[in-house]
Each structure stands twice: as structure tokens, then as C-alpha cells.
Length: 87
Figure 1 (cartoon, rainbow, N blue to C red):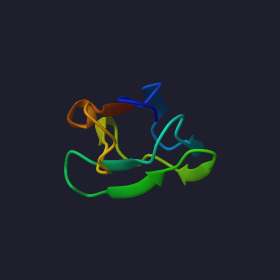
Figure 2: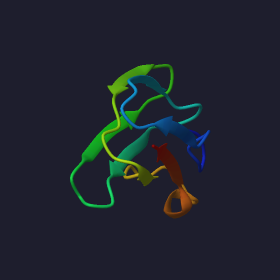
Figure 3: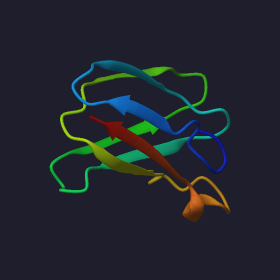
Figure 4: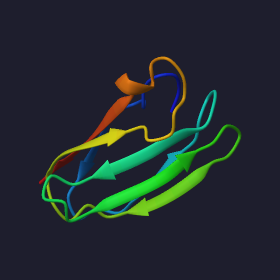
């Protein structure tokens, strides 16, 4: 995470296990991920100088959007990211 984006967008394969490293290059950010069917909610904090490792195995394909839910400055309202899960 960095002002005001999540980088890079991730392209993952359904059923494969990943270790995603989450950190911040500047200030504290929120990482909120929700599935289109509201089956999954993930909420983490991205902190400077801290490497948060999330192990996940996508169970459904589709586009999943990430929003920052921790006010991080003037561009906070535009801070989004994407995880694309393919079959």
C-alpha cells in the first residue's frame, strides 16, 4: 500500500495457496476485501515497516476489490485495488 493505491493488482489462480505480503510504504492504511457474493470479508491494517503475511486459497473466481478503510490523507477516497481470481 502507498498513497493512494494498492500495488500491484494481483492475478491469482482459484484453488492455489498464496502467501500475500501486505505492508505500507508511507502511512497506516486499511485493507478491506469483500467478495462479490459477500461470502468473504477480510480486514487488515497495512503498517509502515511491518510485513503482514496473509495465507489465502481463493475458492471462487472473479474480481475482488480492495478499499482503504483507514483515513490516510487527501486521496483516501480514491484508494482502491483489485485481486483477480481466474479458474
